[in-house]
Amino acid sequence: MFGRISLGSIGLVVGGILSVTGFYAYFVGNSTLNLVGFFYGIPILLGGFALKASELRPVPQAEPTAEIVQLRSQQATATQNQIRKDVTRFRYGQEAHLDSSLEHLGMSPSDEERPYLKALREEAIDGHYALILEFESPLIKFETWEQKREKIERFFGPGLRVALKQMPEDELEVALIAAPAPAVVAQTNS
Image (cartoon, rainbow, N blue to C red; front, side, top):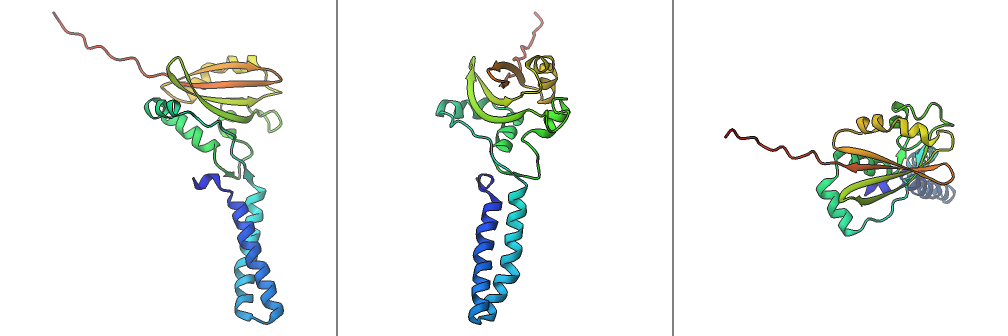
């Protein structure tokens, strides 16, 4: 829950209020309140500016239905849950969502070429929980994504399969689909 609140905005508001209070107290001669405003307000305000400057906003997510939430609780892998939680909260000091993952997969040769995660949604595909990542990828073509599909599956771990779908205007969808391991049948000797 706290990841969906901008710490930079909180710092700016609290630091701004304390700083203004400190300046006001200085002019009316209230030295105690003046010190609180200067010694706490200005550092908090500067910290708020720093956080705001390095802030990465959460990716928009379509609200899942109750059936999808139930399917998620039954089938979602730890990787799917971690990705969903990471990209739907404020992040600090990162260039883009999933930047290190894309770099490891060879899909981010430079900051300019890096695909941009623009939305996220959850669906059921053939009765399996799927996390759909919607990317804008103008400089890395869909064919490159298709060539890396198996590498993407291995990278995001066991229990997942990846389906790619090309969308108009240099956009694509990467579906991370929960693929439960097949049941092991015990053999008996007759």
